[in-house]
Length: 382
Image (cartoon, rainbow, N blue to C red; front, side, top):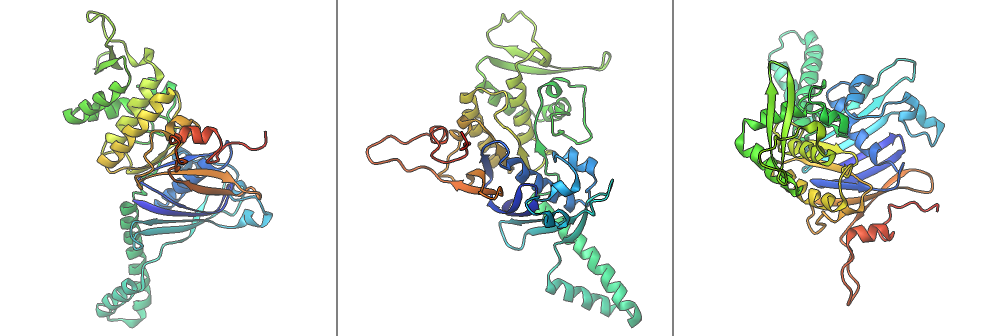
């Protein structure tokens, strides 16, 4: 798991440090930089895989623009500077850092200018091993450099896996893609907008315990009773047959094309958290999309439980105050941050702790504290 991220010179982020929990929620007004935080992590993940072409970045949920404007444009001198990202796990030994550069020429790609090096003890061990099996001293420097590079690549792979940084994605499911089960994107098992959901459901259905857990958790929607997966190989039709508990039992199930969109969003989220094939660390932009406010609160409780059960780490963004009422800020694994821009326009973050009630008064819900402006995150210009 990742405990700390440091970002420098990325879009509205001039310099920012954020200490994450297992479940982290970001709130703040439009354009404050919430999504920029998510994108910087996705950029580090892409750098760790040495895949920094624009097509790859877009498929990860990054809003790619001109290279100059991917940097902080508060000072024109920054437009040629590196983007720097540092991530640290639970222990200081588990960390990854990179400096990413672009020459700003047309059609040019980003490249890694610097990344995490191996420690001095490892260097000395490699040198001793190479020296012991190299008879020609003239070959020693080249052999050492080659072995050093191989060790560096392997060490980074291990770090990235321990951090859960490999395959970090910013999910933003879309209604029409969730309904179109025929679509399967280039990212498997789930694309950032929801492509691949049907296939993942089929894979999950092999494990009766997991598919039953999905069905049970979907019952937070009052009308839901059951679903069946239909895959007609002759007609190539793929559908989810959904049962409404209020309908006549003799009436056939309806399919995902006529289903409530909130149901499809919940189905996507539960599959994402329960599957072993989905990333260990990911983000969901606008987790409240298409959901009733009270359902938002309950969903947060469910997703926190799933994150702990299936060892996932997630960052949510939201504009819906009801999401906050599903958080338990007494649990240090659940963290809430207000993201804002200071007087210079730089993106900053402030951690919010559980509000202490005034003597003799009832505690204020987090949603109310948000709406009343007690914790920030609201526009101040009107």
